[in-house]
Length: 513
Image 1 (cartoon, rainbow, N blue to C red):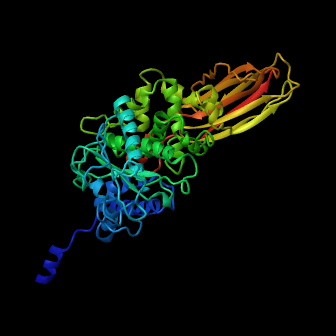
Image 2: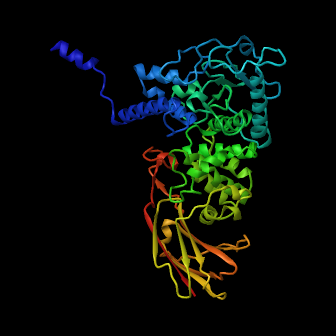
Image 3: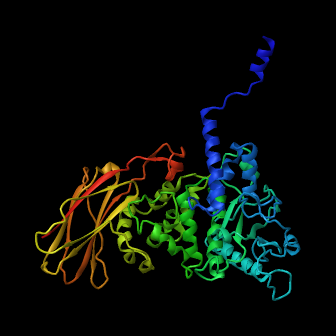
């Protein structure tokens, strides 16, 4: 009797469903971080895989908690590199590094290195100052990146690391060199802030970065080592900037704006062109905010489209809206962009026009000739009365079906192409566009088709084979409506919310008149 009562009193309460779900999510974050840092998956970037882990590590215990701490440890943190424990050195920090030899004299950045093991940068030191030349190159590029992103563009500087685990002088931002290129990793930045473990209810955190120690051509054959360092520094440092606004922000927005920053700071390198192959410029039916694989980087093309249509400051204004520091608006990614753009024009119209840009990027982007071109279908109509017949495309939110219709040589010079649309109802945010691409490379002003409440509308455009190369018909589901925001149930915006208007059917028919 008495002993039984005591056992009941001493027994730990059973975990709630919420606690169980949080533990499972944390364990998944740990597994993904292991795989990403091993170079065995591209499901997430190392920066965001470690972000997920840092924000969930308090839901882990025992060996899992220790493994998470190892993955999040700074390279000079003293942990043993085992089980893919990130970039931790197995040797001591170089004496000159430990005494500030890699610190910039113009911006608050310090580069740290070791002189031993495979993590050491190349030992060449032409000026014999005990600071390897590659360290000095890294300092130079970090100065360029900081100066442009923070001083010129006006983004928030990374938060002070006074609450960090090590090198927490509260002044300098820390960058570490380590041999992560052997696992196919260019670099990463992640959180190191004691507030991740204290129930802090805002999203601004301090961080540090790790860059490959040499960007050797044997590991990175595209571009020069310095060019790879440049774009990696611009990209990863912008993650540190983002963490000072909102470390919880949607994955697609964090990665696309970081890849876009490569374009802004080092336009000539063009390493981010590789990601366009995984973007809507190749796969227009994949939602813009789908946060899987390389497509999250490729969405930088959408941000470039926005900045060329408006101005470069638009992305900064959106991050100011996404700000989740005390007093910040804390909009999610699409909400932030919508509210910034809506001060100038209708966001739905801008989204609708993007469907044309996916097929004819040269008409919308200054370097559009370097972008791929998407087409869900292609038709050639050879004579008067010829028709595509009714064609249908099933579209999820923020996705498109650009279609090309070309005139055959027998089509009369006076012919026009009538395009008829039967889209979903207006409440689901359908958009339809038609644009003529001339043989001389010019384009007629795009026509936004006025769809009625039921989604029906039509438009007529020139279709003379002597002057018209093709007509682009772009259908779009531009819905940005979600439910259950911050439920982390999907890979989409608003914290993994559920889109309200997916799987909508869009019909069109084109007829030669």
